[in-house]
Image (cartoon, rainbow, N blue to C red; front, side, top):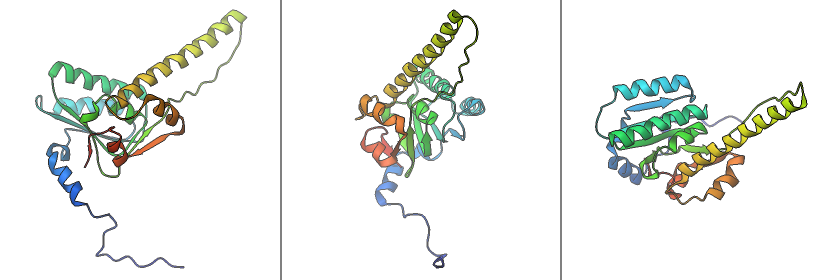
Length: 207
């Protein structure tokens, strides 16, 4: 069986509904973000983040957009802390715009923004999951040192779990999502489509 011929006069994209157009008109600043991040959340992204912040207007509403499949959660927390400091010390309104994919560390970064300052583009997905640890533990030497090594790994896991829960709490603050729901769904990689995110209060609107 052969594929049907493609009509060049038709678009593969769905037509933009009138209510989507009206939403976009409501938020004109979102069409040209001051900071636009894409790719892996890593130290290269952080450098780009800082450079774009330095070039952005020093006053007024700031729009930060991101599209990412994930990366280093500690770098995401570092960027999030910069956002928090700017908001508190400069008393600025800072808006988050997620585009296409806001996965893993991207969701960690999104947690730095209040729910009513978050937006997604149409069709974007958020993915929330547990932190992942890959570690090989080798035991060698006196028993006391072996015990200390195992305790150190356990403490690392426990602290990572506390940091993870802090992130989950920040992500769902002001939304209709219960912490137990995140705990239940995060181990299986929870994908949240843009309109569902809006209905859950995870973002203010979809454009």
